[in-house]
Image (cartoon, rainbow, N blue to C red):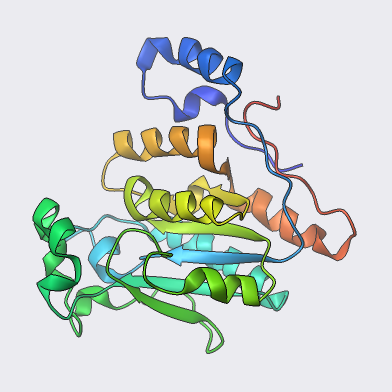
Length: 236
């Protein structure tokens, strides 16, 4: 079975972590999904503007990129979709409200080196690359109908940042009816606190937070009639 970390790994309440976990469990949050046989992987914004630590909006995410590459290789080998996203703006009007809140993102202009996918990220000519203007990979991109037309029944979300575009993408994915898996070693953020807070929230409400190794185990099982069900921290 797929495994995730202990419940308090995703807590941001310090010494009250156990109380928080108990409260969420008693409220019925954090149960597991049954994954399907046709997963797609969405690699959210592993572009230079988010993966170069010398850039104000960036962080060092080399380990997360390496772990993601292992997953995308396995997904491609199954003939299933791999989707990459990047944020790029032709003008400020494309996300005027969001850019007022987060003006640092205005540097992500079309043609800038910051919007190029990180060269450490493995790509294939058959991969889809979507340019987006907002947090979610689904908002305004046509991604949902593409996945539905491809028969996708599960979404694996990797990328950056955990508290921003990864979380938004996971929320929209489950809203479209896709079970969502988030390998925690394939997502990253600029700081630990928002990263772990987002993982806690994702695990509680929107996704099964797991690891790249366990995702690979799940992908390996897809030749069987009963793929391995990812369990989460509430199952043990």
